Length: 394
Ligand code: FAD
Image (cartoon, rainbow, N blue to C red; front, side):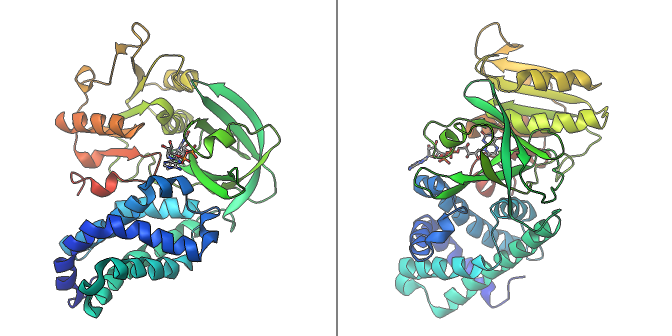
């Protein structure tokens, strides 16, 4: 809990910090990577730095954390912290790095605020930083302890690659050593680390698809403007990559999901991957839950893993698949997802995955249709800038 001494100082300075943090964080990262270039190797995404999304996500989380604890002195923003902790754990972030982040973040704050930063203000924000860091460290330790092994990454060999949809490859890797593997929960992801063109190791996250026990299977969409997917798409059978343990909290039954209520799964493009994992889990357990799967794509040909998705829906007693495809005559409906065609009940649980505008559009329509925001989960395939700024959730 924030101390009585720091509380009024944080209240008074939050507006200025929130306003300036988007300038502070790029400077913080510049300072940190200048002193610790090793952190860019395998941990931080170089593209997210260049694009500015990771700095914004970090900036958002500190400001959101501060405003949350001001408004709710007896609790923490659990959902945001959990999302961040899972991502950190998938990158193998260790407790020892938190003082490093503190050092360079506060150097950047001091440089930006100049004379405004009195020792009292610095002390109060130091307290906020460590409240957040300690909460994350605790969560991350729990996540590491729940794994079947003590390693952050293990080598996996590419066993099979198959094209699916447009520019998507379905990769199956098998364990290349005897390290015990943690069973993944449907909806979880792994970080896959490979070398970029200049030899720097870079991690990217990919949702796990159903696979055999000693395997990790993922479907990777090529991002032609991206750094790592063009390299991953070149992988040949027999090649070795490093794979993290499974992490991620967007799973069935998590947060607002009540397993007795109808389940609506909305995906677009490569956002199909968590839905395939959910459907497989439901089919394996013989679930009789009412499930409505809604997929949006350009056409049946661009839709990744379409047949697999349809086969799980067929296996489930109470599931149906509805498609919104841009190509006329190919789907159940033509064009963008329109909730009014689906009659979603207000007690439904919804999971969303796809491009951000798709998820924002579907979420707004669901909320308008009476589905409370806390019953809507989503996975963002990049640094999460949405949850942090999502006033509706707050
Ligand atoms: P990056 O190098 O990360 O680039 C991404 C974008 O950043 C580019 O399109 C470009 O616009 C911009 N960019 C890149 N370099 C620069 C630069 N120098 N300057 C400015 N901007 C730049 N993907 C899947 O395909 N399948 C999945 O199942 C999947 N699951 C995911 C699950 C989670 C939890 C998360 C967080 C992500 C998931 N992703 C998934 C996304 C995946 O991790 C990658 O982000 C994505 O594939 C792009 O990787 P990349 O290295 O090719 O692109």
